[in-house]
Structures are given as structure tokens and as C-alpha cells.
Length: 95
Image (cartoon, rainbow, N blue to C red; front, side):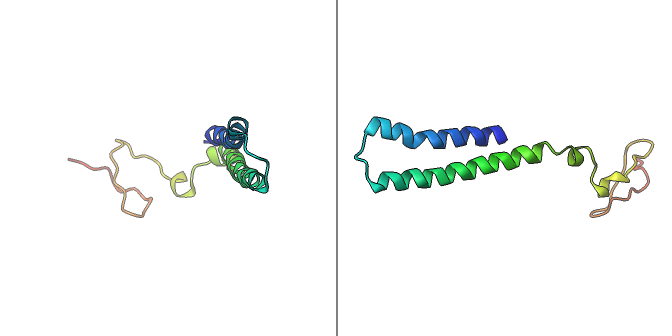
């Protein structure tokens, strides 16, 4: 996701530059406002990319099981039933 947002950032950054090269409008304050607004969105996409990159590289959360599932141990046969909203196992299901 971080790479996708980085690609979106680069595309967003290039759009007004390409338009300026191809269309060649008269330089007015409207052009400056468009570049300013575009830069704002470029910063938003870049910030999101950095946050996704940071979230994806946190080893302390990736390797640690959630507290609710940390104490679950499978039963002998593997056929187990869990109550809704509970993490405690009942006896194995027998047919």
C-alpha cells in the first residue's frame, strides 16, 4: 500500500507539470494556486505512504499474537467449538 501511495504521489506531482508543458497557459496567479493546491495533495499522499510504510515495518506488533488469542491451545483432535464472544474452548465435538 505504501508503494501504491508513493506512485500516486508521483503521478499527482507530475500532472500540473505536464499540463503546464503541453498547454502553456499565461502565467497568472491561478497557475500558482493550482500548483499550491496540488502540492497540498502531494503532501497528503506522501504522508499516507510514510504512515503505511511505518505501520508495515513494526516488528513488535507483527510477531506478537493478540491477547485474546495468546492463551488458546488446540485440543487433541483439532475439532473445537468456541462460544460467541469467548476465547475459551469447549470439549472436542464428537459426531
